[in-house]
Image 1 (cartoon, rainbow, N blue to C red):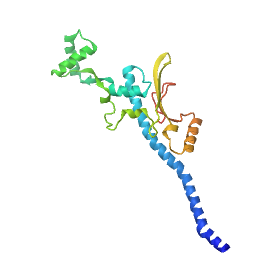
Image 2 (image 1 turned 90 degrees about the horizontal axis):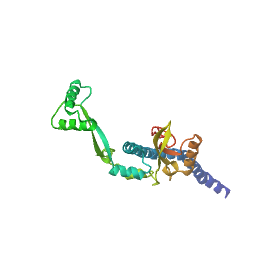
Image 3 (image 1 turned 180 degrees about the horizontal axis):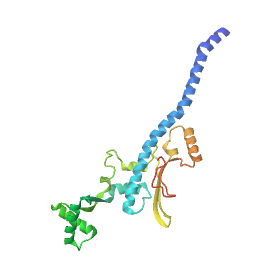
Length: 234
């Protein structure tokens, strides 16, 4: 009987135990690898979303002299807002065109700034050549930004990818060296972005970043101090 048990142990149980231990060892090694792989993939998509928010915020500030405080305000700005664009006609390095333009301007001494440029634009459209001027016009935001992204969906900017949690965004105006400076920040905590992945590894990642004084996730901008709207991945 003991011989049979010994054979069962040797030929069945021992190999099974070895396979089980090997599998457990491989899994323990691969778990962090897989975690980082998925973290990097999710982070890449999240970073693009934060970059899009930054681009919209910069455009919003150019129009409103402040940053939007909510993503809904940004989405509405994209869908309904307009922004001014300035087009340069002719080159200031073209001395003949500049001289010709100066001669034309003498006929319209009563016009200044935008009014004068509008008159030059009118003459240009009527066939007057060799003019140098700038013309400013309004264009819909959605006809200007992200035109090279046919799959861009502005409503997605409100959410953290892969989980559906709302992006955390704030804006403020802070006095810096006596000057009022508009600031904003948008954040995606790893607790949301990495939801569904190994929770202990995510906790370890948060602890590591906290020890280094870093935000426990991805963020762009800062409401604490001007940082040129940098992202913490840059």
